[in-house]
Length: 166
Image (cartoon, rainbow, N blue to C red; front, side):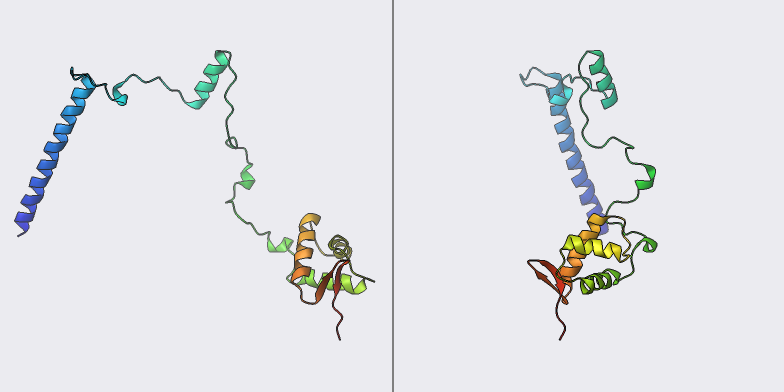
């Protein structure tokens, strides 16, 4: 049983080899232009010589042409320190504020206010109350989002204020 499978496989492989040999003969005949009137395949035609990109740029400068502009960031443009994997990177915990500190600071600022505060004024009040930040733009966004999520804070046309507790 196994020997018949092997002999069948050998026979199939020999048939495929014969087919491939026929195809190769036809391709060689086409490449040599064997009087058939057909063009040689593109691979057999003379192709212009190509150079790597730096040599091409140097050759065009020698010929008096401007070097072609390369697209994208040049290699090794980033310093080695920023070669970390891309994606969202969290700051080290020593540089981040403790969880819940922003919410507490917003509540303190709104309690001390005489009326509603705009998010920009609220951000400045949070900084005055000692909330640690390195970038006021990101703090503005954080303040606005935290105030929007907090159910104890209401948003009015005049700004943000604490809901009255009864």
